[in-house]
View 1: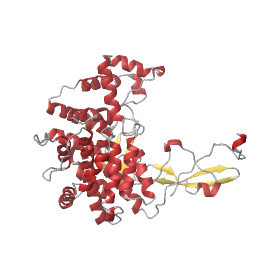
View 2: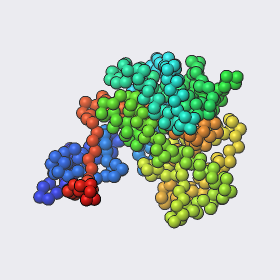
View 3: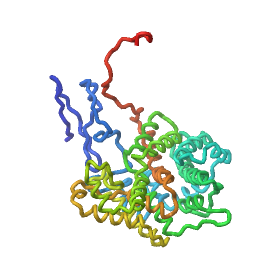
View 4: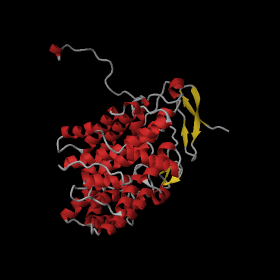
Length: 428
């Protein structure tokens, strides 16, 4: 028996259907609200608004659950690879051995960028932000594959997804090399996805970089954990831009720009910055925590709490283990990690944080991993973008293949001036 919610307004009562998701999430369907009543809803920041129905990712923030296409993030991080997880997100199922081999072949085939694109990097100043370069170059890459900008059929999507996934790491590594004044490295066909990226980042003509297996595994895990996260700011941007029938490349470029914002993709850099300042100042962790608890101090604890998770971020547990493994492998005695562990220990036994459910999130440890590997802070958000790309592609495809999809167009409540008369310039 279908359920509905009743809304009484003036002398009218209307029934609004209740939509139930596969995990028993429920929503009031308000698509007929304006037509029946003239009303719209107001929900700044969309905190209570379901913008779509999606098959891709499920989050239960109260229970600390994250699943891609039904698979728990813990199992994917333990048993899968980033490329396999990307295939799952984009195409809906874990690949067979033959499908995975073919997808890897396509990634290798399309790992080079057009030689003319290499000259584009010369147009950016050395101080250019890597995310600015990434956004511009992703859009430019679409100009070199015009037949794949709008991949409607699955066979074209396979080719397009492999192209953009492979080229984004080449572009990202090249933007880093440009920023430090070193020659751009060509990719190697004998290396898998993550190891190849590290080679392009750190190899020198006289000293090829051979990444340790623990470093490759940790970075691969980090990319898996960032691969999708439901309707966040950048993913919603990709869906909105895609709803206008903009190309895959243009939509992904827009997602990069949204992720660039410090409130979205810059959180892990903010954690490292906070820990670095704490170390340099010589201030104790206890003193920092005391300031955080005082409202008038203006001090925020970065890397704790999450807008969606009201329990422990499941990704944080996984990345903490990976962080320890990398530091052991590299023999790094990282004072920032010691501060992070001390901060975590204090926060997890302090009533102030427990009552507010301020637990460490994925950003708390990811920046420490990247710093240990040698990835600079200005590249942290680029790494986030590489990881998030499969989710963006999956959501773009979901919008484009939905027969009921239409261009996104939110409503507003106007609160500006009412009708005014034009005043001639000489009388103002």
